[in-house]
Image 1 (spheres, rainbow, N blue to C red):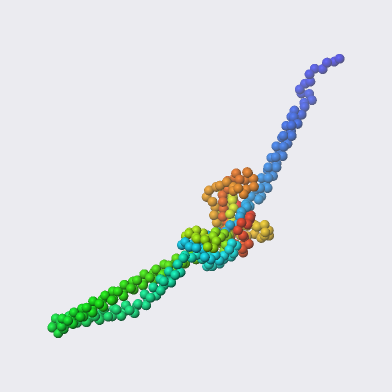
Image 2: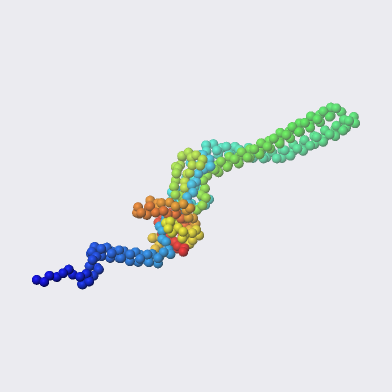
Length: 315
């Protein structure tokens, strides 16, 4: 039998892909597919990268009404959920004996104010007595007036001057009484709580009959005239967002309507995403809080309502 020598490496060379294992081919195919998919995703994102949509919540400004003076809550005219207008009386407190004290001081002030005519008469009497005394002294020097007449006129002039001083003192007391009455009425006014703006009663912190200290809130009012949106923007987009920028607000309840808004504030410090984020990865991201001012959208934006904010990113 004819024996064949070893095959020459130049004869029948095996293709290179025969030398690559099947696992390596599959791995390379997967890498190629992932690269193509990533490129397609990047291209898709580039087409929509001019607008950023973030979730937000409608907020309203809250005002807490508290008295400047302590007292007992006498009347609570509004309940939670009630609408109020600017200037409406919301609650009234009272202090024991305050009303009687006001009446007393008013009476003193009115009685003292009626002494204006009395002080004018006293001034005229004092001036007349002083003139008569001066004339009698001149006559006494000439020996025409007697010492008894001079003494009598001196006593009359002294009495008129004393009366004038007394009346003037009473006028000072009347001014003090009037000031005291005004101060007491000011305390009464401090016990009346008035709505500073149109809104709704959010929370009632006290009940009728409770003693409320000065500065302790009785109710809180939500100012519904100008609701605003609280939202958060990721750190990788914050450089393309600025204050004064016009945005679009979307609400699920009005799918075909967009409301205008303006970015009024951007936080100066980053923070981690609030706990409302759905995933742990989202909660680990750094974000910047923004405030979006609105015109109220005709009352359709309610406190606590979730919204979507569409922000056109700047290049």
